[in-house]
Length: 165
Image (tube, rainbow, N blue to C red; front, side, top):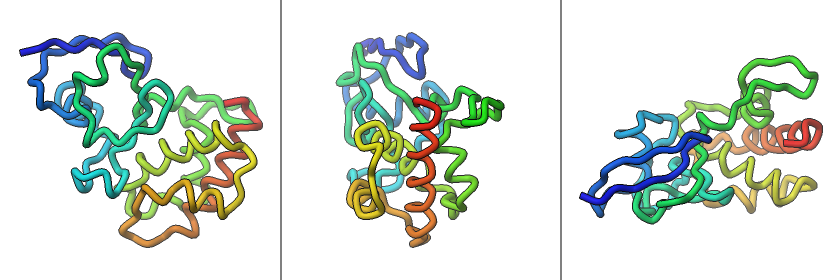
């Protein structure tokens, strides 16, 4: 069985995996980072989105061995506890925006939505509602609550800019 070494949420990790092990399986089953969800196994829903070397990546169709040497960030790795006002609550500004603007819905799609939204905030800090909706087209919410998700992402992008994150 091959061994794969990568950095997950800032921590060096080495695990033995079968060649067919998906990155999401490594994260959830071996590293117990269950914030990354598996919704469809076909890259349609985006619930499994993580960052691989800073880019949003659907981990349900990436092999764990393909992530060798990469830096992977999951929803658990986003929080550092600093809010825009300098107080701490353990949440990334985008996570806090989802909580404050009711973007959570049932919560199943939320980790993937937030990981995609953070990447948008980094790529386009001036994103308007149309840009947000276009960017999130690879993430599905089965609750159909996109209005609050878009509001959350817009607020999160502003908070990211205010905190330089």
